[in-house]
Length: 284
Image (cartoon, one colour):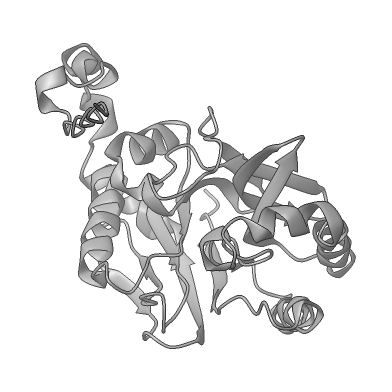
């Protein structure tokens, strides 16, 4: 009987920030990182790294106006670049459809571009939420993708793993005031509860918390980045994934009928109550 070879996946996480002062130089920097690591199986950039984040534009919403004028060709140019190099890249960008703006994670390779729209939009953002969780087919196997605040919802990770993902990527722009250890606990839990590799690509300081990392299927840290800008590399052995799944058989013993309540909305009493607006006093 022929012994099955071990399958290893080599990835690169580019923990960098967006440069709004020189957009062309920023795009060229992204290209240089991709070109240098083109031999890697996957290169991952943080959330909204291609176009920037609306919250950092002054006046607020200026980025949306720039999308109409100067950013229309940036994505297409980068897509072509990745395809010509025969690389595989996941990065964050904004997509505009009419007057609607979506926060996307795009998976680009020689076969084309597939995008996931952030489904759980943070209350501080003005994006339109997507309506579909996605797993992308690749030569590496099935890759699940989610974005920043999506990580707070355990159902997202479970659905992606049930759809066959061995590797789930979270791209983020987690602010510095949100402790990194909170994100790490979520991600390590997602990895061990769903028996998947988790790749976390966050933006670095000073506004963001950095600490991008890769977590193994037992929840262990494979590699980690500091707070500042960094390029980190990791190798994942997918045979470790299969071995752990055979040792700890979670999925065959699931009982979905017992979990039906998780698809229901919270009862009103459990939701955070919005403060009532005070009525303006009538002038006499």
